[in-house]
Image (cartoon, helix red, strand yellow):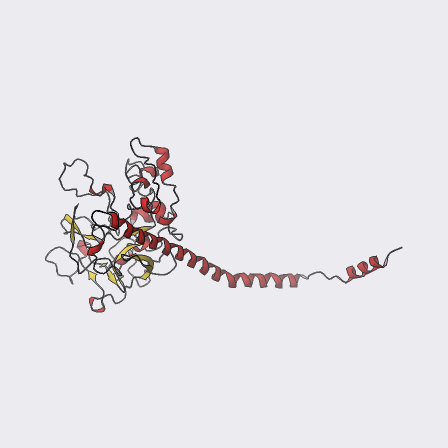
Length: 377
């Protein structure tokens, strides 16, 4: 005999109704709609988180520069790598070195980079032969800022006997303070040929650093001694406007200031049309995280429309002597350099230039390793 409980369960089972196909599709559509609504917000939150972390990293670097400056005998805030003054091969001591191995933008801190992988031996495909790597003398043990941000030091895998395995590990280090979380390669508009060909490679992996120092230097167009009119190789006490003078910036912003649309059509990879842009790693055109000599940091926009002296901007033309500033300087390759904007400057005017003891051959820009690179005639 069935119990009353069994009868109740049987009756309840008869009353149960399954979902129809239409109801199921409606539920799926509602879930898809909610996902579509929430995804942009989640992406924006993720992007904001990366930008905040990047801004924190670059601020820490600028603060560490002030610490470095306090102990540096020259009072320099941006560390200068020991190889900055290395003799060129085949030259006698005291002779001019017209082809310096570095300009100082990256080698102040970070890991071993894997860019220009045929620089040392001419054997492409081997990352330890990189211009920015251990075998070339730029491993993490040699980069001065590492001693402040990562105290304890790194093993020197290039001295006294070169350790190939150790050098490979140098290129795989995760030194987060030198890495922007949004650094995912050169975006459209970047035109440093040695980096852009590795479109999926981050600046951190290519140069060993997501950030670059302000190493703005000048020289006569025919070559000769370089002079610094930036915080690089200059006592911090001789920077007259520390709150607006750049110290460090996201590396993708390093070339953006020299891409004034109407003036840079002769550079490789630059679209002279109205849609040309360089987007920062955080999704905004012409906007990059930057740190200043007074150690504050903020997202800074580089403006290109209306950049005339009358509006408070400085458009620099570096031409042969005797060529007037407003004449066409295309043949000299120095006609589209913008070094000032709203709230920022790369130079240290009104302070005078400072001699560096470094020499330049006259080919390309003194402190930009031929990036941006001019198109072939």
